[in-house]
Amino acid sequence: MSKEENKMSQQEQMVKGTAWLTAGNFISRLLGAVYIIPWYAWMGKHAAEANALFGMGYEIYALFLLISTVGIPVAVAKQVSKYNTLGSPQKATYLVRKILHFMLLLGAIFAVIMYVGSPLFASLSRGGEELVPVLRSLTLAVLVFPSMSVLRGFFQGFNNLKPYAMSQVAEQVIRVIWMLLTAFFIMKLGSGDYISAVTQSTFAAFIGMFASVAVLVYFLWRYGLLGVLVGREPEGIEVDTKEILVETVKEAIPFIITGSAIQIFKLFDQFTFGNTMALFTNYSNAELKVMFAYFSSNPGKVTMILISVATAIAGVGIPLLTENFVKNDRVAAGRLVINNLQMLLMFLLPAITGAVILAKPLYTVFYGLPQGQALGLFVASLLQTVILSLYTVLGPMLQALFENRKAMIYFGYGVLAKMVLQVPSIYLFHAYGPILSTAIALLLPIVLMYLEIQKITGFKRRTLRRTSLLVLILTVVMTIFVVLVNWGLSFVIADSNRWTSIFYLIVVGGVGVAVYGVLALKTRLIDKMLGARAQSLRNKLHIS
Image (cartoon, rainbow, N blue to C red):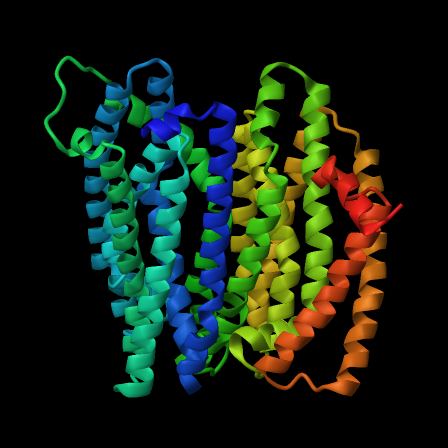
């Protein structure tokens, strides 16, 4: 790496790397959520159908990305770090070169599978012929992604996350620019063919990745590593790449399967909803696509942000959990479990409550005024986020305690419950059915994982119950204020368009954040998340 990087202490590099990665993630997610506002508006009367096609394509694509990388980028980071620590940086770059070859091959295989299988996936999704070009436009991204993620892992191994973060931002910026430009030209200046616009929007994933690779290559060149990766192979270096790959894949499979639960359940909804509804109802394919957008594609933008923030907050201590377990320090492990769950509840409960109260302006900002079942399904999806977040925290927690097998078995119980409940739920509740079946199905592994974690670490449930009760009380107080302000504001200005909805979110949401924040500071609840900084914040705000 550069002289500048070498001069930094490990602590400085870690702080700098964390800052870059946090910034990269935040900017990427913000862009990924905001673009939908003009995009959805430009699709006009086909907006819901267009978003359904986009969502269907991306669900299948996301699963292909997950499978095609098989956890290898993380392994690359670990191995690069290992060889650098041992003073063998040439071995690290040689390993990355070999893995890059393998990942290019893997990407090509999965890209071909996705391209050839697109008609089948479209048929299973009941997306019709319109979904085929959407899926095929994503195959080039599947080709590139595995090798691109290896390069990100390479930089991560050097604990230099600036290139990683900048490649993320570049990918998202170029992707969004391509999406918006093509959507505008096709829908406003061109043919108005929304299927072509959606196809270009999904093809934007490849354009974004091209930009990401360009940024990574630039940093390789800047740090003098490009020649090592693409030049002549160094002599006298032996690394058992095959053994590392096999070991990594074996270790990664449980994490991939349990970690992809939400993805798998969404795909199951995609493949069963339209086909099941067609058996029991007379809805047209277009109407079914709109319903799918209302319960899956549309809420997904908001709910996934909530889930990612919640799990990021709660997942901070998971590596330490493994460390304490290995040291046989059950008391410290139990304390970490409680801290993780406390932080999850502290964020999740008020965030979901506030989002439900402000569901109409929140939906309107992204998708315009809700039509038909849209608002009810949006609220149901927001409530389901509590279940999804709990699962995505407890699963890795159990695996951090080296209970991969039980995590897999419990996940299997959830999948089985989903399969049993899906058709009856759709028959009885139509578009609400998939949401309900997922919530009930995931409750089973959640309860089992919670009990197993408690059994292993022996954490005190009473402590968790006390915190949960306090969070609930503060959330109820916040809710009273939010409801009153929301009600009072309705007499002043009607929530009838995007601009007034943004005003509602800023004013009412601001009151909710302020009330909950002050109460959390006064009760010392927020100290669990902010530590010593909470006292500094109390001093600045003159809160005793």
